[in-house]
Image (cartoon, rainbow, N blue to C red; front, side, top):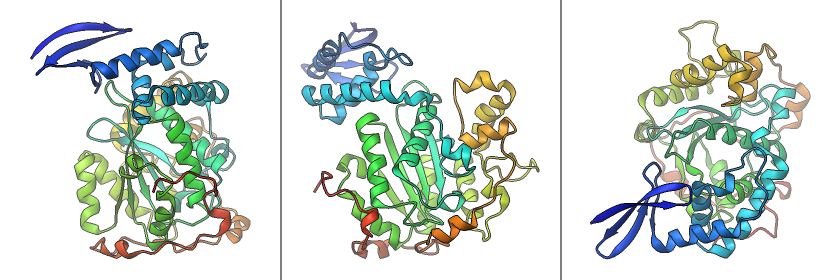
Length: 378
């Protein structure tokens, strides 16, 4: 094996020959290219010359990290990648996602429960969601996409060099078909696939029931196999903790397990319903996230306030709580009447995942179905 350094654009790569093959390795990121891929990166960069830089992120489409992610998502097809990336550039220019805020959470505290709570063993941001905590039972694509975009844009700001993906933990306790259905899931996954390619590292779904399994089967045919392969459905008691420990440090594993336990309590404790508030007792479980995340991002944000928001914002209501804007919340009785829950999940009381292998396709109401013109991956 022979190696030397090679300057490719603004990054220095290690140039290696190995058994007659030539590879480029980025010293600070997880990139290993052969020369053919390297040529495509340069070609794609040339095709973007002349495009006006984005005001908020001028290096977005000049970054090798961006170019590689988009190329990989289109299996290194240069023409398809060029089209996709140009559309994403204009999307970011129009939407300005790095400036998005979730107005739904500010207007209705707890509207969405999804929030960053820590990091896995590889340093990837971990985002946790629980349906029982959400103060809204009928979500739309608009509010869900906005909230998810806010979260992942802020999660990006916590990623160390070499980390480019994130992990989701979806706790299905309290799930309703209004809050989780194929149409809603399809809308969110389309935005993620088109504008955040190769960003999803792993999704772990826990406390799910046959209804969720039916919804997942209805959605799965519309999701690229590379994406669906990153979704793990874990139900049995023994496997949940085992799966967490394989991916998360013990601190985060313990936090998620305790968070899951408390979110099964009925009625839901006010401390869990108002998960954005700091516990009054320092020894109690903190629903805002694990202690290392709290210390590094939330407590620091409390001290530095507005100046720190530029780097990372936690859940919108955590930010409101820091500023003294949110104290408590009451659920709307009118909303509760309108929302008919479907098969709430009370507990993970099985030691086997086998029952889910036999679930038939769920009969989904028309209003919650994926659009007829959606592309299927079959």
